[in-house]
Length: 255
Image: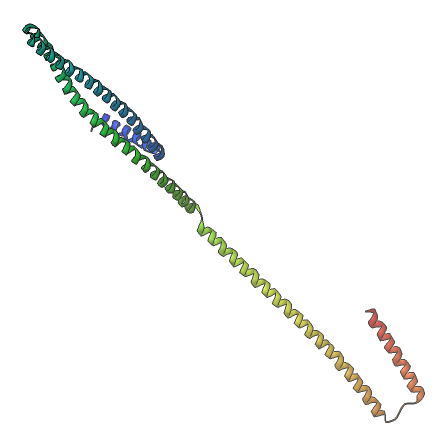
């Protein structure tokens, strides 16, 4: 393969690639309809021109036939009058018009066939344009649907669903951890309160036990003496005890 052939092929390939990329299906379809409609206009003009030519040929043919018939009648009239030369001249004129008529008849037949062909082509082109318009609308709808689907696919493809789901999993784990810490804190708080209550009860029991022991000691001391104390002694001891109790109350109030 020659160098120029290779260069030509590369150029054509690049041009075709550029054209393919630049082609917008919707615009190409619209332009195709426009081109077909322009062809339709030209075909209609051709049909109109052919029909006009056919009509002129028909008129000329009719005139040639009329002239030929007229000279035929004149030749008969001249012959009836005994003027053979005039009859011969009339027949000569009739022959010329007859030959013209024959030529026109051949052209008229060809023109009639051409007009019929053009009319069939015109009808076929009109039908193709109608089909093309319907197909264009269908293809445009399909293109719109395909573009929408493509955009949706691109959008779905650009979404990082795995990352989003992983984020949800992490947040769920954090919520679970927070709930666990909250529950543990609540249990610890409840347990410390319970311990405090028991400590209070235990402290109270010690005091009550000590108070009971003191009462028993006092009661036992009174029984072991075997006699009642003198009135003066009782009064003195009661005064001392009252003083000590008052002093104890003051100390407790000041705490």
